[in-house]
Image 1 (cartoon, rainbow over the protein chains, first blue to last red):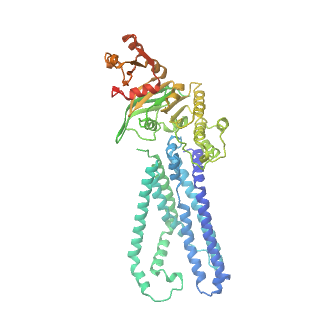
Image 2 (tube, each protein chain N blue to C red; image 1 turned 180 degrees about the vertical axis):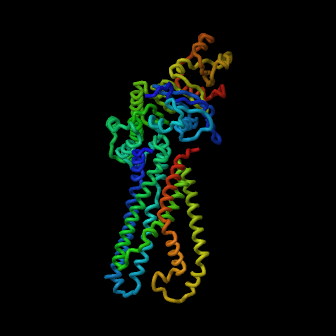
Image 3 (cartoon, each protein chain N blue to C red; image 1 turned 45 degrees about the vertical axis):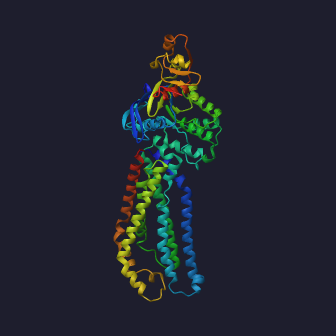
Length: 263
Length: 292
């Protein structure tokens, strides 16, 4: 592999992703700022004057969970560079260039890593500021939880690479996108059904309970949050190795699919 | 420069699709020459070129570019060839300057100076988004990129289609300059035979996935001719002397592949020179023998 080619292809990927990255990163920071404003309101503003007891903790919990999820979506979502390549004709033309599929794959993985790092930085800053406002110390398992979440969202990136990178023409891409969407739908459905099967009785209990909902923790079954915490604790040691493995997989899947020839 | 006789050698190329087959395509593009690859729409020109470039896999056959197998030495070959398609394959949001930066990293022999000279010659802006370029500008830009990394072989697929005569003439002049040192070669597919008559050294006609005729352009033009006679006189002629015959209300026009021999056989016959266009049309109708 030649570094100059990887650099050139990385520049191409970056240029094509630039608009999406700027908009989505700004949106992420916008969500972060909204969380901070809510927290300021809890401390000094109207929410404080309303005298709600646990609202500060609830705001902290809501944004502590949603911002990392938003961060992962920003890092790994909208990987539409390949569809832009196909529509421009570059996907076909690139076969005529002296670059290897491994170099193109490397460029894609490098950009993915940069996007993940940018979002980890945003989520970490958010956690530090939010925690300081709320008087909470920085959670010890924050990074591993964030990376575990990234591991899960990476499945989407891997699926997209597997289904879509092989396409060189618009009809092929249309078919590949449909296959990718079908895979995502089936996977999501299976996860939802698994959650429903396991926690239906807990949700039924909560539905029958007439206790007034006073905080976010009253809306989610304790069994679900307990199981999630236990899962995160169990998978914490493997979070980073799994992410590295997924990035390596992303490289090899991308290389293989970019090597494929049109029929 | 490495030693090779033919810039492109194709032997027995076969590619099968439902409803269409590239069938046993064989031809060579000698080093230092331009070959015109001519055929109707859907004849197989683009499929052949995509096979040469390994954009599509082939079912049978052997392809060599610059003396090397087109798959085993793919990377080295692609460093030394340039490709121009009928549509510009660059993203609309890029500028020429940004694309040049990318190409600089891709090709070892990329020359910013040469690229700048072409951009100036073609009067193309470096900082304008490519989506705002006209069709002629896009084609000139592709050619600027193609000729800025010291490529030995230029492969073009319908590159002059849709361009006005002034732009086409300008581009053809550039190609002639490209070939001056006889170290460079061009394969140019087109159905605009007038362009090929101006610059091609050799031509290959393809129709329905098969090669009709391949050879030096001047020899083909010299040897082929159209014999014109009345329908009554035509009946006295031997059909095997003609490729095909067009019957009109005014008489018969038959394409011959050996003008001199036919002129000797049918003394007094009127045999006019044929253009590449006419030769293609008559060869395409070879199966019918007589057509109108």
